[in-house]
Every structure is written in structure tokens, then in C-alpha cells.
Image 1 (spheres, rainbow, N blue to C red):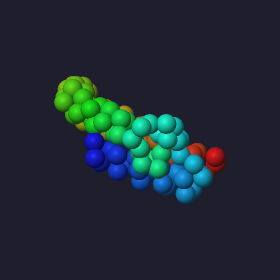
Image 2 (cartoon, rainbow, N blue to C red):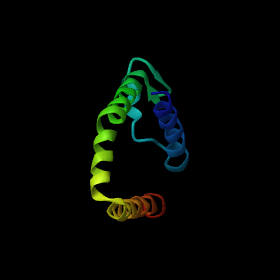
Image 3 (cartoon, rainbow, N blue to C red):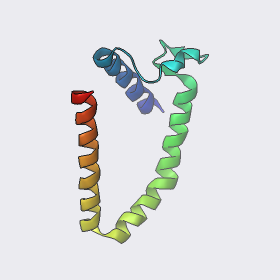
Length: 95
């Protein structure tokens, strides 16, 4: 929860610096928030979601990756990396 909240806070300041705003400005309507950059309720939900991922989804992904084999997992990882890099290039350079 703490690491997700710190990442969210840092990301909001970076977005504000480069773009003039950040996507989740609705946090101002939350009862407990810090400068509308972070709020307690979403932080708790991020923490619970992280636990669910760690203990429920991660073991499932490990089983799937083990069945696929190293070569297929490497190819899939490279494809996902390319998609993410293209998205970052588009987001930061074109938009």
C-alpha cells in the first residue's frame, strides 16, 4: 500500500509538471486526501489489490509461464515491452 501510494504521489507530481494536470484530480472529493494527489480510500484499495495479485494471480501466472516454456515467455515479454515503449513514445513525444 505504501509503495503504491508513493508511486501514485510521485507520478501525479510528474504529470502535473509535464502536462499541467494529473488524471485523478477527483481525489479532491475524497474525505481524506493530500492536495488531491493521493487519498486514503484508493490507497487502501491499491494495497488490497496488490495483495490479491501477489497471492492469487501471481501463482497462476507462474504456472502459465512454466507451461509455455522460456522461449515463448521471452517472445511474449518482448512483444509486451514493445507495446509499452510505443505507448510511452506516443504519450510523451506525440501528444
